[in-house]
Image (cartoon, rainbow, N blue to C red; front, side, top):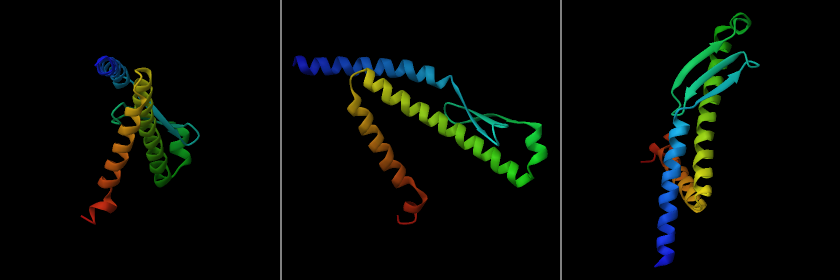
Length: 125
Protein backbone atom coordinates (compact mmCIF):
# COMPACT_ATOMS: atom_id res chain seq x y z
CA UNK A 1 0.00 0.00 0.00
CA UNK A 2 2.88 2.39 0.75
CA UNK A 3 4.35 1.73 -2.67
CA UNK A 4 1.03 2.63 -4.31
CA UNK A 5 0.78 5.85 -2.27
CA UNK A 6 4.34 6.76 -3.17
CA UNK A 7 3.60 6.25 -6.86
CA UNK A 8 0.43 8.32 -6.63
CA UNK A 9 2.36 11.11 -4.93
CA UNK A 10 5.00 11.02 -7.68
CA UNK A 11 2.31 11.15 -10.35
CA UNK A 12 0.58 14.06 -8.61
CA UNK A 13 3.90 15.90 -8.39
CA UNK A 14 4.58 15.09 -12.04
CA UNK A 15 1.20 16.50 -13.07
CA UNK A 16 1.83 19.71 -11.14
CA UNK A 17 5.30 20.06 -12.64
CA UNK A 18 4.02 19.37 -16.16
CA UNK A 19 1.30 21.97 -15.72
CA UNK A 20 3.89 24.52 -14.64
CA UNK A 21 6.23 23.65 -17.52
CA UNK A 22 3.40 23.66 -20.07
CA UNK A 23 2.36 27.14 -18.97
CA UNK A 24 5.92 28.36 -19.41
CA UNK A 25 6.28 26.60 -22.79
CA UNK A 26 3.01 27.99 -24.14
CA UNK A 27 4.18 31.60 -23.74
CA UNK A 28 7.30 31.12 -25.85
CA UNK A 29 7.86 31.78 -29.52
CA UNK A 30 10.12 29.77 -31.80
CA UNK A 31 12.06 30.91 -34.85
CA UNK A 32 13.23 29.20 -38.00
CA UNK A 33 15.62 30.69 -40.53
CA UNK A 34 16.54 30.17 -44.15
CA UNK A 35 18.44 31.92 -46.95
CA UNK A 36 21.55 32.24 -44.78
CA UNK A 37 19.50 33.70 -41.93
CA UNK A 38 17.98 36.48 -44.00
CA UNK A 39 14.47 35.02 -43.74
CA UNK A 40 13.02 34.38 -40.28
CA UNK A 41 9.66 32.84 -39.43
CA UNK A 42 8.29 32.96 -35.90
CA UNK A 43 5.60 30.64 -34.53
CA UNK A 44 3.98 30.29 -31.14
CA UNK A 45 4.11 27.12 -29.07
CA UNK A 46 1.18 25.61 -30.97
CA UNK A 47 2.91 26.24 -34.30
CA UNK A 48 0.74 29.19 -35.35
CA UNK A 49 2.65 31.55 -37.60
CA UNK A 50 3.19 34.91 -35.87
CA UNK A 51 5.67 36.71 -38.11
CA UNK A 52 7.81 36.43 -41.21
CA UNK A 53 10.77 38.74 -41.65
CA UNK A 54 12.41 38.94 -45.06
CA UNK A 55 15.62 40.87 -45.52
CA UNK A 56 15.56 43.17 -48.58
CA UNK A 57 18.55 41.33 -50.04
CA UNK A 58 16.51 38.11 -50.16
CA UNK A 59 13.69 39.90 -51.94
CA UNK A 60 16.10 41.23 -54.58
CA UNK A 61 18.24 38.11 -54.92
CA UNK A 62 15.55 35.40 -55.06
CA UNK A 63 12.86 34.99 -57.69
CA UNK A 64 9.29 34.50 -56.48
CA UNK A 65 9.44 30.69 -56.45
CA UNK A 66 12.77 30.58 -54.61
CA UNK A 67 11.53 33.19 -52.14
CA UNK A 68 8.37 31.18 -51.47
CA UNK A 69 10.45 28.02 -50.90
CA UNK A 70 12.78 29.89 -48.54
CA UNK A 71 9.82 31.26 -46.56
CA UNK A 72 8.29 27.78 -46.31
CA UNK A 73 11.61 26.35 -45.17
CA UNK A 74 11.85 28.97 -42.42
CA UNK A 75 8.27 28.25 -41.31
CA UNK A 76 8.89 24.49 -41.24
CA UNK A 77 12.04 25.01 -39.19
CA UNK A 78 10.16 27.22 -36.71
CA UNK A 79 7.40 24.61 -36.40
CA UNK A 80 10.02 21.90 -35.86
CA UNK A 81 11.66 24.01 -33.14
CA UNK A 82 8.31 24.38 -31.35
CA UNK A 83 7.66 20.65 -31.62
CA UNK A 84 11.16 19.79 -30.36
CA UNK A 85 10.70 22.14 -27.41
CA UNK A 86 7.42 20.42 -26.55
CA UNK A 87 9.04 16.99 -26.72
CA UNK A 88 11.98 18.14 -24.59
CA UNK A 89 9.59 19.66 -22.07
CA UNK A 90 7.55 16.49 -21.83
CA UNK A 91 10.53 14.19 -21.55
CA UNK A 92 12.39 16.45 -19.10
CA UNK A 93 9.35 17.02 -16.93
CA UNK A 94 8.53 13.35 -16.64
CA UNK A 95 12.14 12.43 -15.93
CA UNK A 96 12.38 15.16 -13.28
CA UNK A 97 9.20 13.83 -11.69
CA UNK A 98 10.65 10.32 -11.60
CA UNK A 99 8.30 8.77 -14.16
CA UNK A 100 10.37 8.62 -17.39
CA UNK A 101 8.64 5.45 -18.61
CA UNK A 102 5.47 7.47 -19.21
CA UNK A 103 7.34 9.59 -21.79
CA UNK A 104 8.17 6.43 -23.73
CA UNK A 105 4.56 5.30 -23.65
CA UNK A 106 3.37 8.70 -24.88
CA UNK A 107 6.00 8.74 -27.65
CA UNK A 108 4.90 5.29 -28.82
CA UNK A 109 1.23 6.26 -28.71
CA UNK A 110 1.95 9.41 -30.68
CA UNK A 111 3.93 7.50 -33.32
CA UNK A 112 1.11 4.98 -33.68
CA UNK A 113 -1.45 7.76 -33.98
CA UNK A 114 0.63 9.60 -36.60
CA UNK A 115 1.05 6.38 -38.60
CA UNK A 116 -2.68 5.68 -38.55
CA UNK A 117 -3.58 9.27 -39.39
CA UNK A 118 -1.18 9.52 -42.34
CA UNK A 119 -2.72 10.07 -45.80
CA UNK A 120 -1.28 6.78 -47.08
CA UNK A 121 -3.22 4.82 -44.46
CA UNK A 122 -6.45 6.77 -45.13
CA UNK A 123 -6.61 5.22 -48.61
CA UNK A 124 -6.57 1.72 -47.10
CA UNK A 125 -9.51 2.34 -44.79
